[in-house]
Image 1 (cartoon, rainbow, N blue to C red):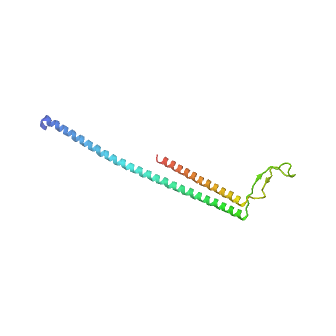
Image 2 (tube, rainbow, N blue to C red):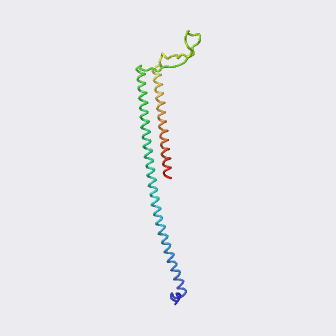
Image 3 (cartoon, one colour):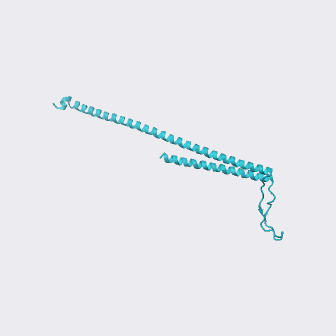
Amino acid sequence: MDIISLLGGIRATVFATVAALLLIFSGYQTYRVYEYKENEQQVAVAVQAARAKAEAEARATESALQRDKSHIQSTAFSERVNAQAIQDRLLADLATGQRKLREKFTCPIPASATAGAERGVEAGTQAGLSTADAEFLVRFAGDADKAVIERNEAVQMYEAAKKRLEEYGKSSK
């Protein structure tokens, strides 16, 4: 007996063959879908791990930036306090007369002036600035010091942030 007669004719044999091929194809597709879902789960786990790592690195960088900022701010604060203390001490000394700021000018003395006088002698070194003028100059210098300290603080913060972000960029690649 041959297969065709066993299956009940040509029509039945073709149908059985097509059904067998469909079952094989269906099984293969089921296997591919299962494999795809498994790969999808692996990719999802890998993405989640990469995201967690990136978030941890970002938190570490942010924490380092915050530490840098705090350190820079505390340093700048102590510099401002020290500058203010020096200014206050100088102003107090000017007010009590313990210190005097002197005007130093070099003024040419005409040749016909006093005998033995030298040209370019500092004039006005015996008389100090008025207290109000001296206080103005000290306060003005104090304001300049504060501006320099604030500028240095801003530059240091920028440099620290730039360094940390460069480190973060290198570590995330």
